[in-house]
Length: 357
Image 1 (cartoon, rainbow, N blue to C red):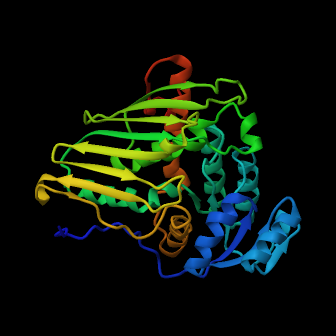
Image 2 (spheres, one colour):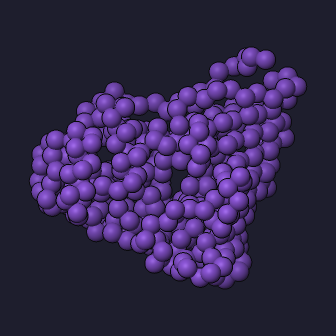
């Protein structure tokens, strides 16, 4: 049966798209997501810098990037570059943010913005001190299924949201540096789901979280975790982020949102690489389930929109929903997970924002 309304879920891009981009980093995410998305969008990538110059040269050749810089200082002195796309591990990011901000160039920073909430606050303060725009690459918000769900919720098709769940079952391909971190699953994987919940329903009042290590002790940080978000409205959201799964038939990430008037189910197509899928039922739209085909993808499609958010900020002066300051609430949710797990109790997000932990 045809849907008698149109889902409004494709993000809008601004008119000006020719800002000069400098890339810092030449790793997997740059090669597989950033640059393919920028190429498809027609963005102007001026040059690339990586600590290992040979890697930058390889990426530049693959994507026809005209300039490879031998140092960050050389990149920042190039007047053709307006914005710097930073894609480095979070323990290195704040130092680069500081140098880029001093140069007056605007920043798209990788998520997580920092190692912890306190450091994220420092990163935002640095950019505000130097008057540069900071946007965080919280790309999961631009997945087509997530945005379609947002559209359904905002237009009342599922009524009042009551319960939302996310189930991740996967064995992540951690990088060597991540194996040395005391923070792992919540910081790198759960941050997507926490931000999805925040995007769909707002910042919760409190979080209760529990994490466990890898059973063989290979990793310093938590390997699997679960958390419950409590909202002042009475709604509850919860997630199971299982990094230990070895049953490949169960790999994936699955969402369900239940409301007083309808239900939404989503499969974001990760890690299979398939397109995101959504199905939903609404009492307002006949007694049937709808499964519309969605345009776009999370990987790499969403990455054109995160950079596009920075472009729109520069063009209009309007703060982005993924600005550094806005992202502090997502980072506070991540921090609350760690504090909750350590102290074995629910933590109010306001307590993190007020630096009470």
